[in-house]
Structures are given as C-alpha cells and as structure tokens.
Image (spheres, helix red, strand yellow):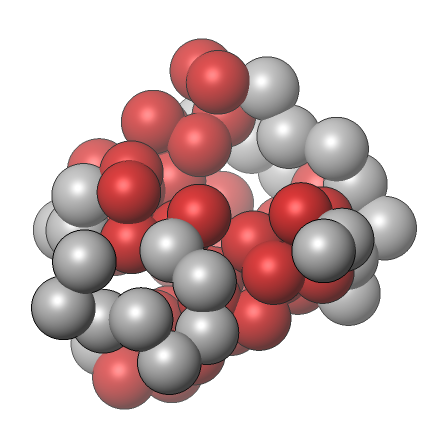
Length: 74
C-alpha cells in the first residue's frame, strides 16, 4: 500500500467534503498551497506534524488521513 497516495486520496476527499479550498487548508495548517497540492497528488511524504496540522485544519482526526480506503468504521 502506498501511504502517500492513500493520505492524498483521503485528504482530497475530506477537503472536498468540507467544502474547503487547498488555499484555506494551507493557511489554516500553516503550510504552502504547493505542499498541499503535492500531498493530494501523493507526491509528498508528510511528517507527523504536517498530518496533525492538516487534520486540525480539516476538523478531523489524524487517523482519518491514514485510514485505508473503505475502512471508515475502524
């Protein structure tokens, strides 16, 4: 399992569900919009701190970003 792609898919899905732009999340998480874009494409390897900041910006648990696809109840 490619964790970068998994985090990217979860991040993009959650961001869209919340109706947030990449720019909004970037500003709230204190990271660049380019970094956010790279994360969503699965090209970045986020740090634990980045995952935590992004989760807070999205209003979700950091676990939601690393949860395997189709495994929403675990």
